[in-house]
Length: 123
View: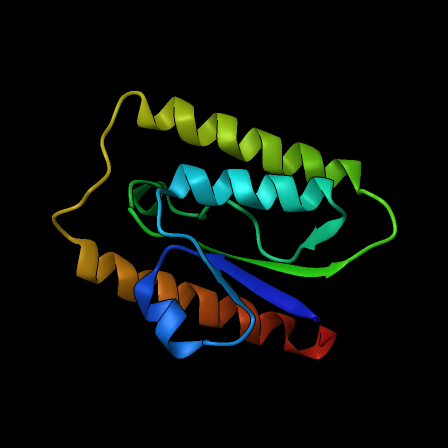
């Protein structure tokens, strides 16, 4: 396995049937799973948090991880840990935007495809 997508987005699961770890749960659960995988030695390919604050309130998130390394990259582990902390801090003052779920699914898919295209040369 060269890459894997950890997601709770049904559109991503449908389009990328292989290389997808689908989690039926919240964004926080996605972040926790990615953190756990980083501690197992997997590398982060895409950042766990979106670049846009608006997308932070999306109920969907897709994160790309790479192949398992021989040892844990503690800088990536710190990024994964901090992502969970930042997500929870922001979500304490705001709720997920469930009303626009279909739109968020599509935007998450587009952002994922952009990340995959940017990283294509690595695989």
